[in-house]
Length: 68
Image (cartoon, rainbow, N blue to C red; front, side, top):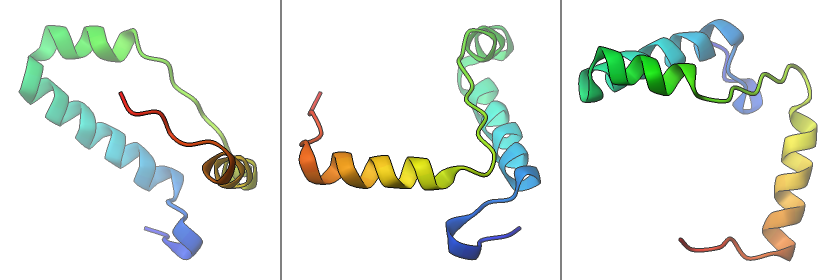
């Protein structure tokens, strides 16, 4: 597992996703978990975390986060 500068390797991230699916299945059952997973939106981004870091820092300093 690579944690250089907050970076998680792709195999580590996929392992964490598998772990999440296991926890979700235990919580809501196989059928409901399959429904949640199949109706989810997944964003895959490789090598451009600078964009996310830049925008998150700009937004954090210019706009308050809404409370729901």
